[in-house]
Length: 187
Image 1: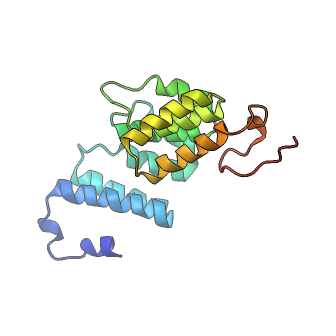
Image 2: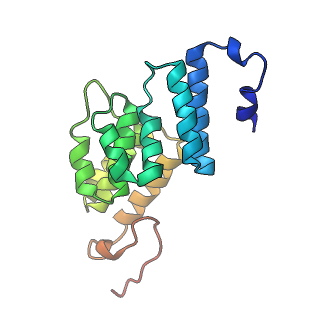
């Protein structure tokens, strides 16, 4: 509600166009995340593009496409991401299909001059876990924790990695992947 009221203020037009565009892209991302209202998000993204046509909106456009038609619709928009956030979204979209070897392969093609961050490493660690490469997963999640020790998503991923490293390798293919849950050890 507060975000929406900002655009109703008398001084909204006095704010620099690029700042208003950023604000509109932020609002569009909130609309997608909270309301799942794709048409409204697309309208806000369009308004932002009119205010600042040179701004990079690859992440927002990718998210809108994802909400419209899933990873298959969004991935082509992020074929050559130019930002780390765009790259991380591309990796997350590959992860959405549960094609973990493809994510590992995709990671090796990170565009220059982008440098992996904690989110990039978290995604790679999950790919290693679900590909059965637990030692690599532990090393990757350790690097992610070093980069962002307080990020919930990184700490959650670290718990998943630790959980899977505690299991017998014979049980891992049968263990649920999305949530570390007790499994039947008599399999």
